[in-house]
Image (tube, rainbow, N blue to C red; front, side, top):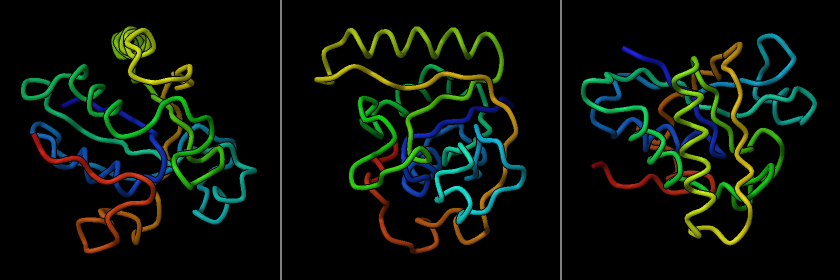
Length: 162
């Protein structure tokens, strides 16, 4: 099993989309990339902690590659929007890939460069790529929110399972 961590706006829809991917064995939503230990949702929404809403997932690399997960990531959001996705604004909604090692970093950079050159998006791709650091699990009511009957998503809708 391997670990991957992605931030693509509100974590509810992002988590649901990754949960549907074959080879993803577990998902957890939380906060990463900030300075406060064990932040709450209220702390993160204040904009003072530096955390992003992220999904940390475990995946079976024999069933789904990290590169395939990167394709899912790019399909879920607009990577040209800095500190926002749709109507959700703030640094917690930034587009970010937290890599778990040199291989993931390399793959993420290649993928980001390819997306930037593709012409798929009108503006420059602003996705941050940084080493995975502390991950703080979000409150239980955020976990698998969509699967438990919550609204479809914040700014994105989960894409169909492959």
